Image (cartoon, rainbow, N blue to C red):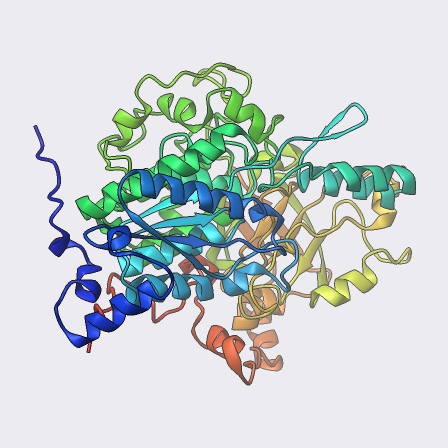
Length: 577
């Protein structure tokens, strides 16, 4: 039987600030009291920070004011001292050019906020796409006991007799509008009812994917990933998370005690099994990198070949996150994969992953498929390599037209997003359904920031002819809510001198997903000639964060973290002088 943790306040990290009988600690105590805090409120109690990414410009987190109070209640119930600390909110819909540009900035802020303050444990409140990996990356580097509270998905959308899913149905109905099949009134009706509540996208976009990955890696409470944002269960989850954070402080259970190569693999297999966002690959590589663990695209592809897709969730399936939650949620899905998972990994709940999912039951075998009836037996997302992507690229094969997974066609190249937007719907555009649309200068350096431009629109003339999917290639990402035969994350990117920079309209491009191959049918001699005749690369922004980003960001296959933050080298504890 394990011994309960010692509750000696001198073992708490915050004791260095508040405990000693010296002038500096006097100053700390007196200023805390200047905010109306009494001795009994904080002395000999763990200080638990509530890192809140609430913002009125972030729909996904618009309920976090209330949730922070509920987390606070849980901390107080367990004898902790709660302190709410606002950190940068990354709202995918309204931040331009992309929240991915700022993921590393939030990660740095979380790391430094945790390190520089008298904090014994932290509740990380996030949900919208990049907030999840950013907060985990920062907490890993600070290595202070932390637990994640996901925002939860919004309610299912509803228009007339149609169930609407975030992103996926926007693209679908926009295509119909461009094709002339949807009137302005119906388009407005969809706009008014596709986002019915606070919370993240209710499809299996990046937000829900990363919430599921976080739970599978052991950094949130059991079942946390799927609870809809406005359900009563989510209120209770917030309070439970606050209570558990106090225990983590006394136990000194840090991210380095939970996150290992095996737990990272659990997260990766979970992402594959739920038909998750391709963005999870980039984020998991970055998270692993903060732990000093090298996670390669090749290793991801090895797991992809053996991990079945059991979550029948849009955009790769039929259902939405609310259905997934009602069907038993992530614990029920993981319980069907125990032979593939590392079930002895620790979790913030104080038990192993195996103990956490023991007894979990799938209530609906349509939403959470059985092993003998998967959405796909393997390979929901695949790695491709070839002379166009020497360091690899990815495709979400379960969200693509199966007929296009083996395809050869002529390239139609756009140098940048504005050019594509200006030319794509020109009725005289020389394009057919066999063409391969290519967008370059859309990667980490080229855009900048690696935006979600990878689901290139289909030209209007083809939409009017009934075409709804075609092969599209870019060095961009795409939203986890997107679908189609989109090859993404081509590395190295064009702005870094990758081969994509040299492709010309008319060049033959071939993809062969079953054999994990992408090929640019141009001779080596011609490639060398083009390289010598073309000026490659991009200019650095002259100032500010953009300059820091462009100078230090790594390529997609390395996770797009800053090169000076990779590796397990947490900063030193601050001196108190």
